[in-house]
Amino acid sequence: MTETEFIQQLKSGSRFAYSRLLDDFQHKVFATCLSFVPNKEDAEDIAQDVFLEVFNSISKFKGQSKLSTWIYRITTNKCLEFIRKRNTKKRFAFLQPLLGEGFEIDRTNYFTEINHPGIILEHKEAGEHIFKAIHNLPDAQKVVFTLHKIDGKSYKEICDITEKSLSSIESLMFRAKKNLQKSLQNFYQNDN
Image (cartoon, rainbow, N blue to C red; front, side, top):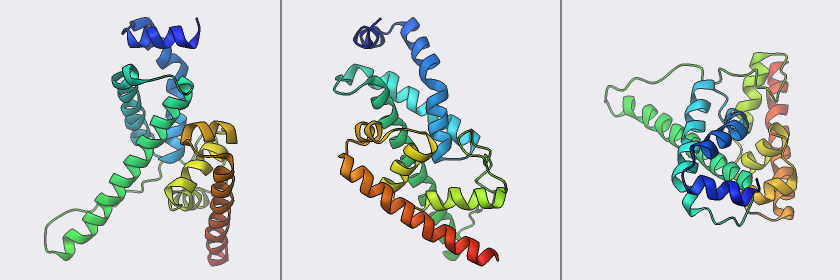
């Protein structure tokens, strides 16, 4: 079956096509979510949101990119949306005690899944710092770095997913590496 035929089956609501879509993409989407949000439960929730979006939006898919590219675009957008919402909640939670409102701050350690399949880490603390450093990158740099270094996507695939030029991707990757190098250098200097 060609991709065009497969997409037509998805658009017509075929259960077989949806089942195949899940079989083909659920692990890949989850791994990408885990790369951006290294917490298993949150990554699972985001992955479910991704597939809901795919199922609800497949009728609007025009086929201007590969189906996998479109799914990864939705995945990265859902991950960034989750991170932005979480950061907003954290800022709000910090302000509430200052304003006298009784609002409990979540003090749990967010980085619970440091044994990500794409990264082997010797020390949990160093792994937490690496993920936090990646998380603190500007969104465009975070997307490019995560898709390339953690998910193993080629620059061409990242160009398709982000709809940016190759030179933009290379520039973002260069800046992401420089920012991470600076952040990690500070961490290891403070550690000694």
